[in-house]
Image 1 (tube, rainbow, N blue to C red):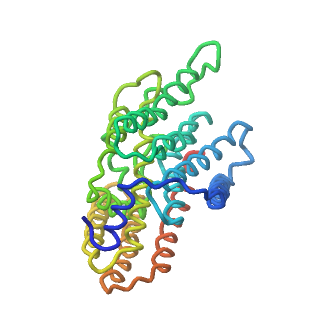
Image 2 (cartoon, rainbow, N blue to C red):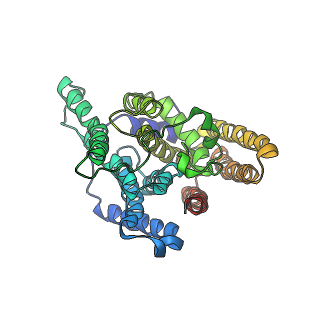
Image 3 (cartoon, rainbow, N blue to C red):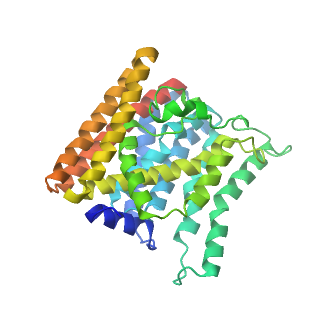
Length: 350
C-alpha cells in the first residue's frame, strides 16, 4: 500500500461504500460551472448554431455533472470531483461527438448518470450473493441504454438516423494521441486527456493499482474490447469507450487528492509520476523533429506539468503540507490546460 495520506486515499476511495450525501448546493454549483464552461468554449460559434445544435453544449455539461455525482463515491474533495467531471465532459474524446449530429452526444451525457444506481446501491449487508447480483444487473444499465438508443435511432419509421458513422472505432495505431491530444483531429476520437491531467493521472493509477480493487475492470475491460471490434447492435464501437474515459477521469481525481495530501513518505511515488511524465515528454520531443509545431508545443506543456508536479514533490519531500497552495496549483494547471486545449479542438471542429 501507499504510505501516509496516499494510503488513506487509496483505502477510502476504492474499498468501503460511501453513501450519497445530500449535497444539492455543491451539485447546483457544479452544474452552473459546467454550463458556463460549455458556453465559454463554444461562444464564438453560438450565433451560427441551429436550435438542435445547442444540444452539443448541454450534452457536455450534463455528462460532466454525471461524472461529478458518480465520482463522489470515490473522491472526497469538491475540487477533485469538479475536475473529474470537467475532464470527462470536455476531454478531447468527448469533444469529438460535437463533430457529428447533436444527438451523437446523448450517450456522453447519460453514461455517468446511468452508472450511479450500481455504484450507490447498498443494502447494509456486505458481499451477499443477492447484493452482488443486483449490483451486477444495475451495472448493465448503461450498456443496455446505449444499445437501445442507437437501435431506436436506426429504426425505420421512427427517428431513422445515424447520429454518427457506425464504423467508427478506436484505432490502436492512434496511440500517440494519448501523449499528444492536440495532434489529431477530434473527429478521430482521441482516446486520452489533456497534458497536465495525464501527468496527474499517472499518480491516480498508482493509487488505484496499489489499492488492489480491480473489480472495476469487469466493466472497463469489456468496454475497451467493444470499442475496438466491429459494431454490435448498430452501436458505433467508439461509443463504448465512454466508460473507459469515465474511469480515467475519476482516476485523475484520485491523483489530485494524492498530490494534495502526500507527505514525505509518499514522495517516492510522486517522483515515479514525474519520471513517467518525463518519458512522455521525451517521446513528444522525438516526434517533434519530424512532425513539427504541435508536438513541440505538446513537449513544452508536458515540461510545465513536470515543473508543477516537481513543486509538489519538493513540498512533500520537505513534509510541508501547504494544502491550499497545492490545490490552487493543481486546479490552475489543469484548468488552463483544459481551457486552451478544448478551445483549440473546438476551433478545429468548427
